[in-house]
Image 1 (spheres, rainbow, N blue to C red):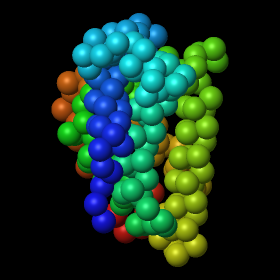
Image 2: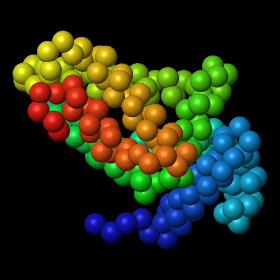
Image 3: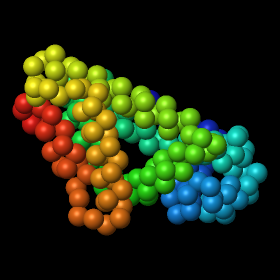
Length: 196
């Protein structure tokens, strides 16, 4: 089936350009210090042009950038369960190496959004809860298959895994010699009878 045509294609292309510019600006300045006007300048259009494509302004842009990142992760995770889900988490981490700007933006925003008044606070709170629940289910499935080490609590393992991945991303951004994927795989495997 052919893709969008004419004006629809141009609109989709312009939205992609705007999202790419928003990613660049947010990654460089953080959300709070960025402006729609600056994003518009990067794209080469007016602020009104940006708002035509993203009603809701800067917050709508932020949400679209974050949703694009999450959609790529969901695609890798798919409907996997148990060990396959844990392996896919490592693959999501592996893709981060080619997306430094996205990782940097995510890390900055996650820190900024700890402020309850930040416009992305609810987004990150919900996101972390959903991910923690999904990883907990994966460890519970591994346990029900007899693959979890004795005494490992699935929720504690899930939270430790998430904390490790988040921390490794920050260390990597700061230039430390870490491999987000391999180091994450090692930690996850420490909870399992057989490594992933």
